[in-house]
Length: 81
Image (cartoon, rainbow, N blue to C red; front, side, top):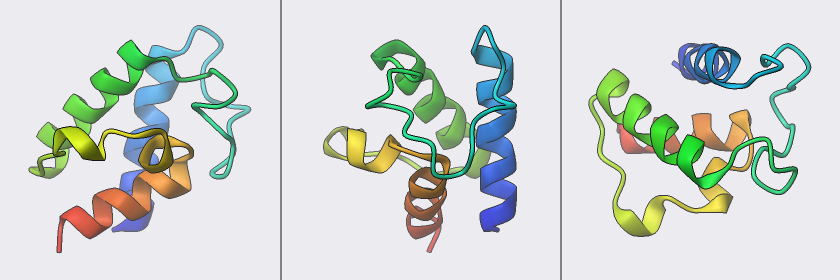
């Protein structure tokens, strides 16, 4: 499932970022490097909630959970259990 989540995040980022996501690695810092701003982060959360039938609590939408594709994948996987 992790590969599916990572692929979905990468597809979303590729469509949403002006330069695409081709240079983004699974451990690239998305928040602290400012690749992902607050609006895009909320759009990503909404997308993941719909795609994987999960719900983020307000306190879970944090830089820690959205910092990298790896972190996002781990977090979404934990919500699906």
